[in-house]
Image (cartoon, rainbow, N blue to C red; front, side, top):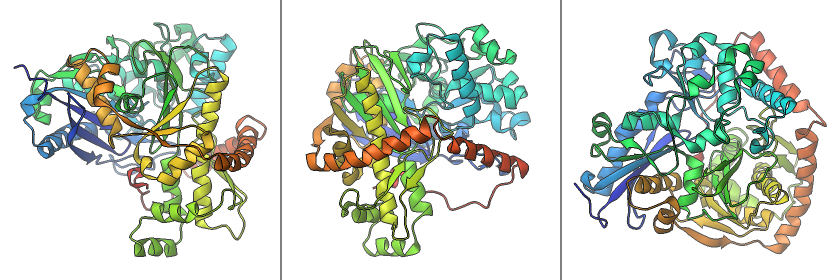
Length: 576
C-alpha cells in the first residue's frame, strides 16, 4: 500500500550509552509526533558482570548485553507510536544509530556468544561498549607497528589508533580469551547487528567501517601487518568480511515479520543502513555544509565536520569519504569524557549541604553548582583542569591519560572545581578546532546537540573560549531525528540526505556569540591548559601512564576483588 506524502511517517531509534530512544517523525517536515525511552536492564557493566552472578571486572572495562538492545525495539517503538496517536500503517521506514565503536562477537547466524551457555560467564563474550578502554596496550602496538612500517592508512586516523576501535578490542579478545576469539565468526558493530535483527540481512555501514574499522581506499590493513601484531591475528579480516558494504541513507533491507511483531510496524518497510549516533545528528541539525562543526554533547562529545578537502589532522578519529554525507569528506574527532566528568564530580565531590541547598531551591545539583559557578569572574577560582578522566580521544588518542585539577587550596569550593571542569571541556574542544584549522580544514560555526544544550552558561562558555558563533539544534532528540531522516531517504521519500536534512532538520543559528572580553580572559587560562596538555600528554611526564599501570598491578594482586560499590552516577541526560 502506498502512503500519501502528507501522511508518511518514519521511525528513528537512537541507541545511547544507557538507554534507547524511539521517535516518530513526519516525513514532510520533520515534526516529531511521539517518542519513548527504554533503559537497558543491565546498563553498563564496568565493575562487575551483572549479567552473570556479579563477577568482578578489571579496570577500564565496559560491557553490555545485546538482548537489552532488542528490548528497545519491543518497548520503546510501540510506546512512541502510541504516544504519537498515529496509524502504524503510515510508517514507511525505520532507521537506527548506535554508540560506536561498540562491538558484538557473534556466531555465523548472528547469535551473540554471550547467549551461548558455555560463554555466559566469560566477559569477552559480551558486547564491548564504546568506552571499553582496556585495549590501550593493543592500540599502542597497532600504532607503533603502523608507524614503523609506514602504513598509508595511519595518517587518516590522525597518526594514532584508539583503544575504542575494532582492531584493538579484537586483538585484546584474541590475547586474553582465545577460545572466545576462535568462536567469534562475526565481529560486528552494534549498529549493523541491530539492523540485522530488523531486516534479516547482515549489511555493513560505510561510516563505522571507515572510522572504526581501519578501512580506507577499499581495503583493510594487510594480512602480513596483522601477522606481525600476533600470528593468531592473521585471519582477523575474515571475521569482518562476509557482508556487503552500504552507503549512508541506503536501505539495508526490509522489516521482517518477526521484527514487525516486536515493533508494531508494517512488515516490508525500508530499514536504513546503520549509522553512528554522532554522525546522524549533523543532518538533524541541518549542518552538513563545509565549516559547520557539529558537537554532540552528552556523556562524551563527538565533533563531526564535513569538508570538500582531504587533509591529515593530527589526533583526529578519522576522515572517511562519504562518512557523513555522500560526496564530501567526513571528519570525526572527540572527547571521551564530558558529561560523564560533570556527573562523576556531582556524585563524588559535593557535600550533603549542597544537596540540601539545591533541594531547597528546587534545583538539581548541576543547576545549583552552575548558578554558583556562573557568578564568578573568569579565573577567580585559581584552577585549571585537564578533561582526561576517561582518557583523551582527540588530539592525543591516549586512554592511559587521566584527569587533573591544578591550583586547589583549602579555600577551594565545590563550585570552583565544577567550573574548572566545565572550562576544561571547552578548552579540549578548542584544542581540537585548532588542530583542524592548522591542517587547513575550515571551522566557522559550532552547532551543538545533546543533553548538555540545556546548560546555557556552558554554551556561552564554549562560544567565548572558541571565539566562534554557536548554533543549537532545534530537536531535543537529534540522533533519533537523524536516524529518521536516513529512514526517509532509504524509503525513497528524498533523493539524498542533504535534501532530507533541509526539510526535516533545523538549528537556531548563532544562538550564542562570543563576548570578546570573556574570550580574552579565557585565553589566559587556555594558555595554562595547553602547557599542562603538552607536559602530561606528549611524553614530558609519564606519571599518568605509570599510575594506570600501578592500578592494574594492584588489582591483579588482589585477584580481581573490587571495592564496595558506590552509588550510581547521575545519568548524563539529566545534566543541566
